[in-house]
Image (cartoon, rainbow, N blue to C red; front, side, top):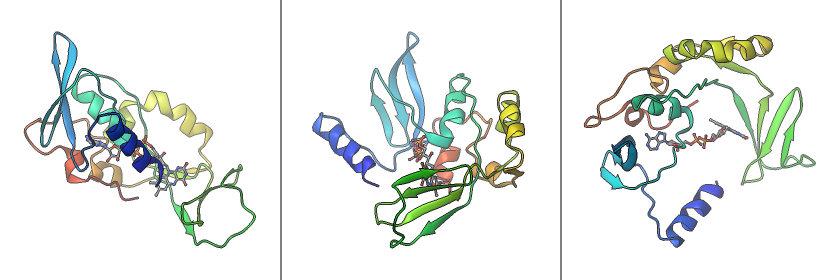
Length: 174
Ligand SMILES: Cc1cc2nc3c(=O)[nH]c(=O)nc-3n(C[C@H](O)[C@H](O)[C@H](O)COP(=O)(O)OP(=O)(O)OC[C@H]3O[C@@H](n4cnc5c(N)ncnc54)[C@H](O)[C@@H]3O)c2cc1C
């Protein structure tokens, strides 16, 4: 909760601008090099861009022909109220993982436990991820249709003049 505002302030101090709630839809190239990022609010002219789209990164790369193998797993976590004493800020054991939040509480999870939604993208990159899923089979369970519904693993090529799947579900609510 403190890192993102600090990064935003640093960008502004260095002469940059920060655009929130502004989805990137694609990129523009000139002679094979990047010359702009197309967003829902217009084009940002630039020669350099960083793609940090989280769960959306692979489907975004697919729009311009980059193969970026990625698999999403859904996990359940517990939010523990402030007051628990004696725990370090970050703890990872074979059984549990805990991270201290800004409010003094903890986020607690069973280490490695998750659900794998079968999506077109999971199937596409199966050869890369199935060996790891098999090693972890005791902690993993098949998921449901959430991954398909949320659209972040779509194989679709989207149009740049229409809302993209990410704009329909901007926050992947676990
Ligand atoms: C409920 C929850 C609790 C968690 N708790 C912990 C924890 O306690 N400890 C821990 O280590 N990890 C935790 N994690 C995991 C951690 O949050 C992720 O691993 C981490 O945030 C991934 O970082 P990222 O920068 O790759 O992606 P993200 O943080 O997901 O950032 C990607 C960003 O890109 C934006 N974006 C995507 N597509 C576009 C587009 N086309 N245009 C514009 N913007 C776009 C998204 O809106 C998002 O803001 C938790 C995750 C969840 C869901």
